[in-house]
Length: 135
Image 1: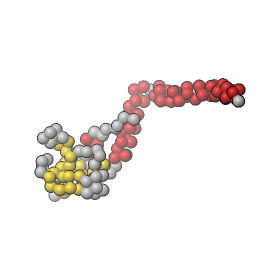
Image 2: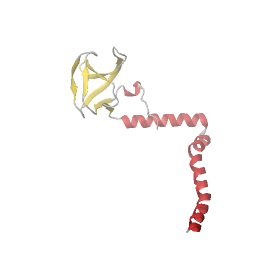
Image 3: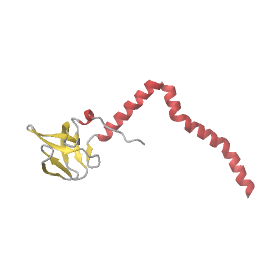
Image 4: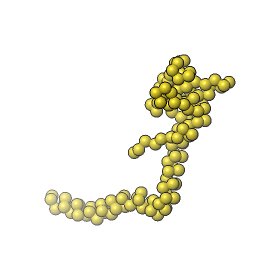
């Protein structure tokens, strides 16, 4: 199954959580500390690209203070990440239905299973007969 990606616009305004220890920076090259696994990092305010074209999430810590965390799918998760991915999947499905039409979409999706079931239905008596004749 292909990996689903989230557009940055879906991340802005969402709360990030550390799934592993995460270093935070200000600006990008100066490490200020580490956020422990399981802790809330904060609300994503924006994003920027660092010196090596690395993506950093700009986190609003309140009172016009910001920190930056390097994007790493193995260390970060969104509070509503599953819901966001499901929304993206639903939008993609809706677009595909609009492009193909409802009937064609469901035929493309389920026809291979229907054909497989029909083949098994007709082949099963022959297979059963073959095994019973061998005994």
